[in-house]
Image (cartoon, rainbow, N blue to C red; front, side, top):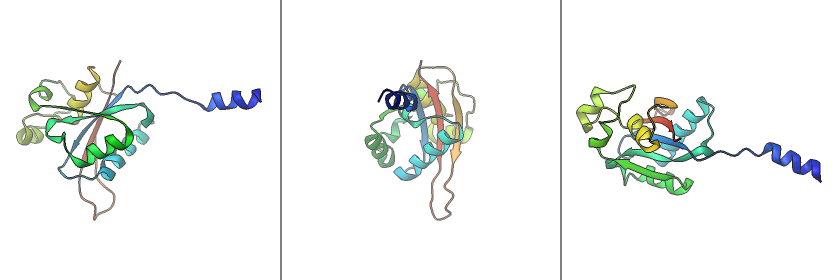
Length: 147
């Protein structure tokens, strides 16, 4: 029995919930698309989704159905911040196009950094588009680690 217990302990890996996933997305993106984007980025960067503390975005996404459903289903927090706050966060990849439309040069990177209360990103923004041509939408993901 002791060998079996040792094996079980060796397979157990604990992940502190200290990763904040910044999410920028088009209005109406599905929960499935957002979930696929997160899974893709975590897989690409060999990170565990078990370490996700929550998702962070701009305050206009506070009632975005796809984000809300995913957070509820995964038991993740959802933090949102106004553009006035996000535009004060120094990010590695600002976008003038985004700034023109929503008054901040960054959503995913700035929200991840602000939520995690840190100054550098674990993963800079990654733009995810579905592989299926009939599926529409774009999701931008960035990841920051809280200390």
